[in-house]
Image (tube, rainbow, N blue to C red):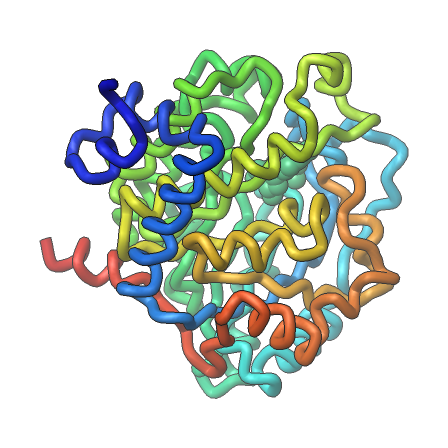
Length: 362
Ligand code: 5AD
Ligand code: SF4
């Protein structure tokens, strides 16, 4: 039979059809896929997992994505915005605990008060860590000047998920206006690469209307874009969003989880030297979700270091790990869980993707 999983993995043709077949692997084929992705990961980054202490510093957002719980029109969210001191304290915590890097993330705003605040925070964080703490930012679509200003202030990695690389699917997930334009998003990814950021993207998996071919296209998009890092995870419905209307059409949550693992595994086969994050959404479905992803190909974890009192309010989706479970991310807890999958934290390292340096030499 043509197109069997072992044959595809042995070959070097990864088109939409082959990738879709891999994403549908079950039983023994699934085990073979996961075995291969785990092998490749080990060959390239051993059993190290790099940490990015995640600071979700504000849930205020100007945008209205149909899937997201903190979208502008959701009036049932208590909005928060950490003080600079709270943010710097969290960064210091990451530095003192040898996390190596942090991620600054928030809802999307582009006013100049916001953008200059970020610039000074970046400068302060570099100062408090003597330049040693790596900084990834995930602050949405901005102008080229703003991206440059933040890069010059010390951010060296940027995450901007394309969310869905098929423009027709993208259009079903976002309002049709200037703020939610697929081409503008692509342009931003291009700018980030041009400026010199290690550039990350990602998608949601198990969205309404999404097909296996869409997901295969997402993985090819990442490969063709020569992306350095990827963070992708299951779509988890949120009651106070327009997309809840399609709840009955979704795959069961366990299937979305499994499909997310397969997406990570296939991406690892396609892109051996990039950084792949085990997304928080995996943990919302299964307490060992991120570790399961590490086992089959992910090499980055973003422990949540947002001060506990705010965590309940950053609800992009429901069932997000809550304050009571916040200790899941305590240093010893995470270490112990990683040990269960034979992985260990790469303390004190930036953990940059090999791919970035190779790409820059081209
Ligand atoms: N389920 C899963 N992920 C979501 N995100 C937003 N809403 C959801 C949801 N309902 C993701 C988007 C965004 C990232 C910050 O969170 O991919 O880029
Ligand atoms: Fe805002 Fe991001 Fe949520 Fe869209 S996904 S509404 S930009 S926080």
